[in-house]
Amino acid sequence: MESGKDYIGIGCGAVILNEKNEILLLKRSKTARNKAGHWTIPGGEVAFGERVEDALLREVLEETGLQVEIIKLLSLTNDLIPEENQHWVSNQFLCKIKKGIPENKEPQKHDALHWWSLQELPELLTATTKKSIASLKKEDFS
Image 1 (spheres, rainbow, N blue to C red):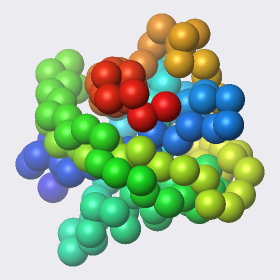
Image 2: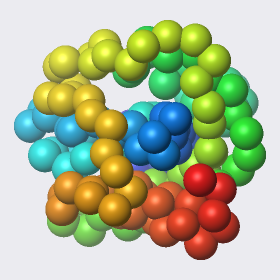
Image 3: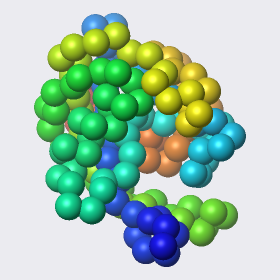
Image 4: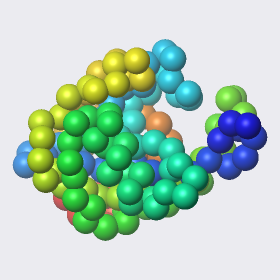
C-alpha cells in the first residue's frame, strides 16, 4: 500500500527564512512522487510511529543538510491531487537554521535548491507551499 494513494498521507514541511527574509525552496525532479517540476518547501512524509516534529527535523536534514529549530506551527493543509490520485494532510512549521549551509542532498528527488524573495517567487509552486507562504504573509512571521 502506498501513502497518499491507498490511504491519506501525512506530511510535514519547513518554512525556512534566511537573514534576507528569503524562503528556501527545492525544485522537484521529474521522478518526484507528485508535482514534478514544481518548487516546494523542504519536508516529506511522516513515518508510522514518528512524531510530526521529528519527521520534519529528519526530512530537512536529509534533503538540505540543515539542522533547524522549529519556531511554531504555521499552517495545516489538506491537499487533494486528483490528477495523480493522491490525498495529503500536512503540517507546516516556521523554522530557523541552527547549523549548516543548505545544499541539495537528494539530487534524485530535487533538481535544484534556491533562496527566493517572497516578492519574486517562481510560478510553479506546490499547493502546500503556496498555502504556507500565504500563512507566513498573513501572520507576518517574517
